[in-house]
Amino acid sequence: MKLFDVYPINPIHIARAQGSYVWDNHGQQYLDMYGGHAVISIGHTHPHWTQSITEQLNQIAFYSNSVQIPLQQQLADKLGQVSGKTDYQLFLCNSGAEANENALKLASFHTNRKKIVAFSKAFHGRTSLAVSATDNKQYIAPVNETDNVIFLPFNDEAELKALFEFEGEQIAAVIIEGIQGVGGINIATPSFLQLIRSLCDQYGSVYIADSVQCGYGRSGKFFSHDHAGVDADIYTMAKGMGNGFPVAGIIIAPHIAPKYFMLGTTFGGNHLACAAALAVLDVIDQEQLIDNARETGEYLMNALRQIAPLQHVRGHGLMIGFDVPESIASLKKHLLEQYHIFTGEAKPNVIRLLPSLALNRAEADAFLTAIQQAIKDLQPS
Ligand SMILES: Cc1ncc(COP(=O)(O)O)c(C=O)c1O
Image 1: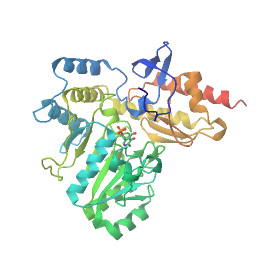
Image 2: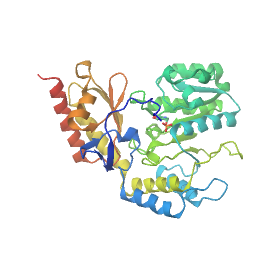
Image 3: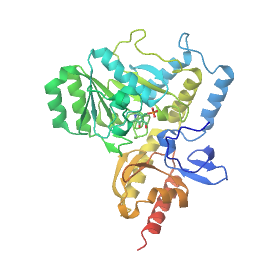
Image 4: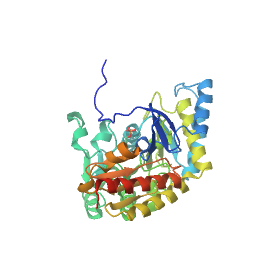
């Protein structure tokens, strides 16, 4: 049987990983500034995480949501403590798209409305409503085409106000990434997020903070929306939540009431996933990784701003992007092939850095030295 060929992949077989490093099957070490697409939050194979999962595996891996799973409440308590959203309600699922799908569906149930507002360059996942709210025609199958999603320009306050004045009473939800990831590290302005909050309050719509990539401490605060001092009605989470173990969830403000069967899942909230997610929060808390993300991120961004050909260095914490000029367009490939450093990208010319939140100064320095040398190789003066 062949694999269904949907990913353009690097010809590298990663066999082992630890902290901010991975090794291929020939023993070559790579610095992981990509975090396996923003997934690695506490560092690869963190000993507390592997131990928690292993111990859980030896007890019970899975039982369905038809019985009590006390680990779910433990996870909710810890998540409330670390995120500060103690009065929210947790629903667990398995992936970022599924988290957004559930959030959008819940908003529609809650408001009894159909219209969703999303923004240019948004990415919310591949499932039906999540992909309809994603601004990329390549991902949208004919069956996902809908008039229920309205796209507006990102950070355009006038357009948002005008839309709400025109049809605010039809709008179930506004969904927005606090920092767009796939779209190229575009930061929502605090005033834009505050406007979304006030319009959602005024018109009874639901503010959904897609925090799948920019959440879980990556931005130097638990949720990137916290930088704007606003509380969303629903936060969606995945990637960093399990440090590579598939687990996702949404947290829901207290005024949105649950009803039996409105949401559901077979695998969501299983014992193993909860053990992995709890271990991640323990480590984020104990090792103060949110502070580390903020400090190391600022250090990296300040240094990157001194590297002349790189343009528009931007981000928060360890979610960083910069534009690469055409003359050194192969920088990402060169970093991987010659310097054994994984980075992320956003088309057409953005390099994205999404390393583990435990990235230390020495690793940041190793990256900075390598990128300067790589630029010199490509642009000899
Ligand atoms: C902001 C955002 N939302 C949703 C998703 C979808 O997550 P998943 O691939 O786990 O379904 C992604 C994935 O990259 C994302 O970056």
